[in-house]
Image (cartoon, rainbow, N blue to C red; front, side):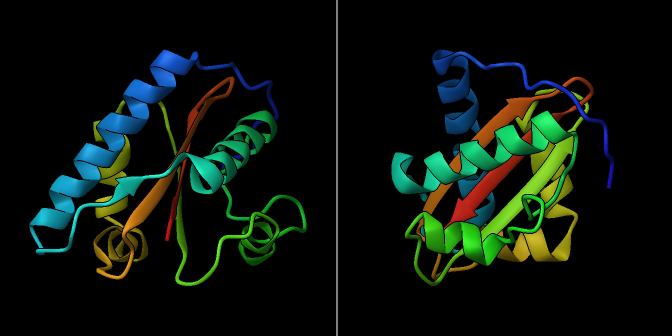
Length: 140
């Protein structure tokens, strides 16, 4: 995993909304290939938690499911996100939805989260660091 400490560069609300909607649409297109129902984009608590984690990754230059010693399960419990739940994280060179979707669809665990039929909601987080764009999706 890359580790380049940096300062997260803010993404305006309208750009975040455009990226989040585009990402959800692209992931729903993948789900349609398996007849899974489309995911619904949820702002609170899913996107709030995903955005917080994306910002942490950008600030610390780390693409990881943990925040220091705080792992995924602890973060989800703190955010009151119950089972079933899953998370995809990624870092990309460019802030392009296509780039992250290709990356996730090429990884078995990430792919499985995207098409998992009992996941019906998604939260999206995107943050730009010094070298990479960091992405986090939380599924419920």
